[in-house]
Structure formats: structure tokens, C-alpha cells
Length: 367
Image 1 (cartoon, rainbow, N blue to C red):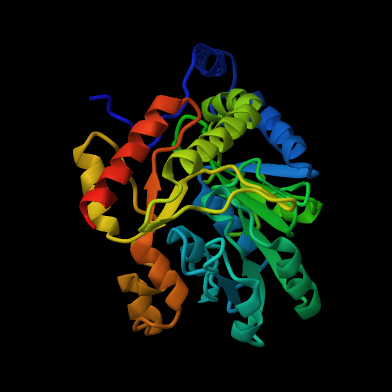
Image 2: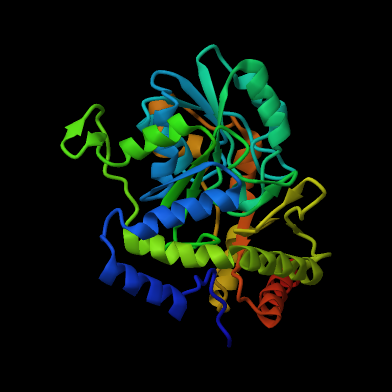
């Protein structure tokens, strides 16, 4: 039986050679490859500035610190990885939530205004699973209410909303280069993107211990730099990103071909005239989710569950903010129904067919 992995990061000779060259010929921290990677990523996203960091979580944290949300509220979605909301707390703000949409699983613009308060300083939409949010509606609210917008684009490298790259629409975009993402730096890494020179400068300072010169510091900073070798790896990966994203969209179309018509599952939305997704995950709504995941894993197919506990129902959030359940019904429903099927650029049509056949077998037997 051919085992199908959940994800399969690409590592080739060009990437390894770039890392070797950086290790041998550059400063290990703050080397030339870091600056080249930042410049290339900014150009790719269509923004003026990019600042590299040690993780996507750091990117979110530094973005919110730069916007000075201390003592203020930042509204985001409860249907995301916990780091999205944790970053608000780490920036001394308070995370608040508005529910997800059943149509695209992203932050639902139609309910955002109902959850705004006088303390709300920013919106933090998440381009979940590699599909951009309905950014025009979100930006309209932000402009009307004088709010900042930080895009959590940690899963959406290269995706497009009305011709603009995710991470280039709000005030700041945040990216993760964790190994399972659409591109990686060979380990943890992150990036912020912005057109605001002051924001870029502040974040560059905070990531480097808050220094204004070698031994002079005017803020309490962090050690959140991206290593040179990781940047060299990422610089090569970036060259392949568009091709990999196109391969992911092709795989998504194959899933539609092989999974359509199965009672018990709802396939994720594809692209349209406004949105070009990049399918970081191929996340399907389904009945009997946990049993399906068990069936797939027993039959050599790695399946993931994203995210079985919405953020507001995490134990620490219940403890801190008194959530009981029922506050965000769509997010809570999605948390019980979503399963992520294997998705990676080099996935073959036969592997997509194998996964789909096992899904079909499970539902034919469970009627």
C-alpha cells in the first residue's frame, strides 16, 4: 500500500547549496541573504518593505506591538490556530472575536461591527487554509471606524484578492515559514510586509533587542531575528512558490473531480473572479469526522484536523475571559466537522485518487 503523507516540504540541491554557501561565506546572523530575502519577498508581495522574523507568531506579535494595541482590543476569528489570538495578548492587548463564515470559513464581515467596542483598535483577519478573506468589506469597516488592519497571511503565501497579494492589503501582513507552509525556510521563520516605513523600522528594532546602536536600547525588545541560513533557504523556495501554488490548485481540482457527489462531505470553495486561493490545506467539512480520520490513517493516509478546539474554548481562554461555549456557533460547528486531506505540490493524481477512494469507501460503508 502506498502511504500518502499529509505534507511533504520540498528540499533540493539548490536549497542545500544556498544554505551551505551562507554558512561558509556570510555572517550567521544578519547576513546578506537576510536582506536579499526581505527585498525579494517585499517585491513578490507588491509592498515597499518586508522584515524577517523568527516565526509567524513573532510576526503577528511584532505587528501588534508596532501598532501599540496595549490596553486595547483586537478583533479576530476564533476559528484559527491559537497563535493568532495569543499574539494580541503578547502585545498587551485583549483579543475579541467575531464568528467565522460558513461559506469560506474566514472571519465573517457581516458580523464584525456587532462585536466592535470603543476599545477596538484593530482587526486581525486570518486568510485561513490559503483562501483570502473578503478584504474589501473588512477594509471598508476599518476605514469607517478608524481601525488598523493586520492580515494573518501565515497560510496564504501568494494568494490573491482582486489582483492584490494577501499581506499587501491591510496596514501590515504577517507570514509564517513553518515547514508545512506553502514555502518554508527550512525551519521556523516569519515575515511582516507593509508600505509604512515607520512600522518597518519599529519592527526591525524590536526584533533585534530594541537596539538603536550596538549597545544602546530605547525599548524593551526581543531576540526574534531570522537566521542567515534560513533566509538563504527561503530565497530559493520563493522562486518556486507560484509554480507550487498552481500545482496545489490543480490538486484541488482533482479532489473536486474524485470527491464530488459523496453524501456526508462539503468540499471547500474554489477560486472566483475576486479570489485566487493557494490551498495551504485542503480542508473538507464532513460528518463523522473523527471516524473518517481514523479510517484514513489506518489505511496509510495522513489526515489532519484543523482546528478541533476553537480559540475561545481553549482552556486558557475560558479561564481568562469566561467563555462557556455557544458564543460563536459557526466556529464551534466547523471545529467539529473539518478534516484536512493530504495536499502538497508533488502529490500525484494517483495519490489524490487513492485518498478520494478511501473517503468514498468510508461513506459507502457507514450509511
